[in-house]
Image 1 (cartoon, rainbow, N blue to C red):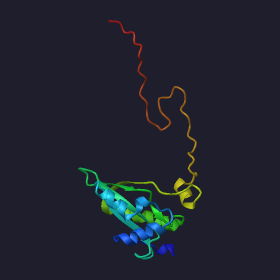
Image 2 (spheres, rainbow, N blue to C red):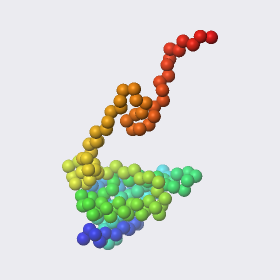
Image 3 (cartoon, one colour):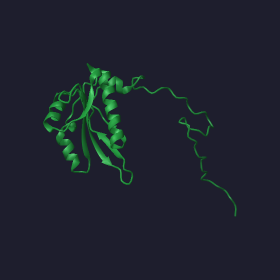
Image 4 (cartoon, one colour):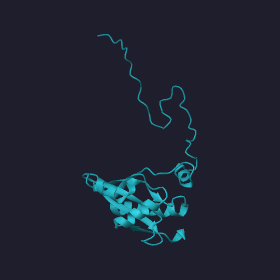
Length: 166
């Protein structure tokens, strides 16, 4: 069933709110009214969903878009989202694909999201990635090295006790 998911923009406030209120991983900043409040502050809400049909969304996100001056690009924020049946990997893939397509069509440079997910859920584990949220061990800098562990060159320290004679 999940392989038949398609993306669509939701434009009906009551339908969107019904979806948000019944969806797993839901939160009030994903409600229609929150998008309208943020619209008064210069953000443009877009409600994107995936599902087998437009009247049966299984996952989605309310993105708040803000235009970056002089560039024509947008920044997007997904407050406390995305939402929906995100424990299912196929649903996550479909939503990710829909978000990428929206990013191309709306010229979105970056998306910031802060989902409502707990570590113990399949969605939470998927967000943590293959290492379970643990950072891989990185090598320490050798004493006397002029390169940090991230590969950037450090500038030489400046001596504060110079004894130059004039």
